[in-house]
Length: 226
Image (cartoon, rainbow, N blue to C red; front, side, top):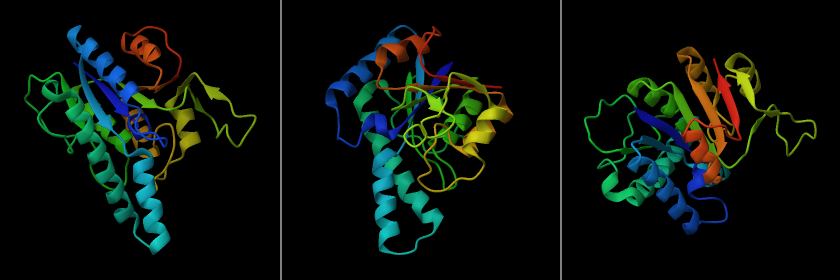
């Protein structure tokens, strides 16, 4: 069974620019896991790249949410193509943009990107979990934990180690807007709860910790569960 990793754009290209050393280590970790028998679906987000384009468009003139989403989707697809090329012959021949596609492949790595407006790549990850029969999604971002409120703004923000979907959805709400930033988006959260999916929110730059999580060992991060 494929392990589903929703890889935030902030992991691939942080605001400071590409970290080639990290990308090499991330590639090695995934390939080492593949050699040990794992298979992966990597869904790549747009991150800061998408938000830069969206902010620029908003600054020029009034633009629809759908169009803002589309420019973000194209950013995910560009980022995903880079990731696919990082894994070269180990990856499926093209970036998959439809999470409902029934793929027949012996490749151990499949790279996916944004699908359509009204959702983020988190929702794509949930759809892929359903398509491929997985009960867990690993959500990789640049934070160690999800919080009940923004810790940069609120000193009393409480980190989440484990939380049921019913409580988590009260935090993230139910409305999607282009560029929405949350540990796991509201549309994806509703779908994950309906499926009874488990989502682990992990700092993807902490590779030893990520390896522990992939090996079903104790890890630092937030676990959202049914």
